[in-house]
Image 1 (spheres, rainbow, N blue to C red):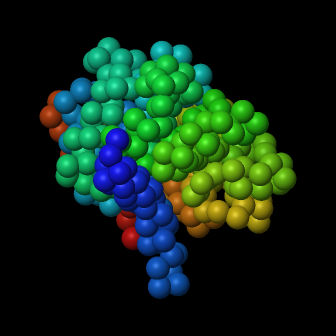
Image 2: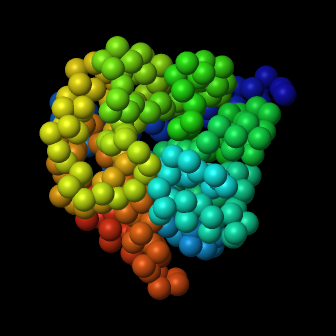
Length: 283
């Protein structure tokens, strides 16, 4: 690689990292505190050709960043909705390499931050050697790896951050105060709080004393912003959870809405649902 190419590559990596930095900085602009809002999208669900349109609809609805799921044959941390979406995605021929092509295409139209969420095997084997550099080159901004513990994360974190990507760790309700602090220090820009124990999935009566007490502990012991996912399915829950956090993530409920859509109208259904939650969370 020439020196000029190296300088261009460095500028590109810094720019990609800045998409997440700017997102977080924008939320605090002018002394305010805009709540972050993210959508979890499974590429290739319900059709491979609908992926780009759903991404565009999420951008238009006002999400601050997108989590793209990597379909996996044995998604142990996921509930039935994401398991089904993952299986459909695999049947539609979606692979980690194809997801990077989706990102490259989306980057020609939008600078919306994109985080890839998947199991460690999908990164190490599905994308392969120097996976973080490949993500960075495609336009990905960060990674979430649910089956990678804090204790096992040092080498992966270094590879991810060296490539200019954000490394996001999960905080569970069972985490002690000390562990919350350790996870916050190890995460690059923000942490992801799992609102309840168990697998992903939309839930009724999500907001409870146990959840709010957990989020209060995170606020007290975390030195970085944090968003909350797992179970948020209504504007009411989104509004309430956002009062106790820096933002929310909606996944299973969005996939359910998309699955209800007639063929060709998936993006429309996604937009209307996400817009209702954006309004509830605040702009």
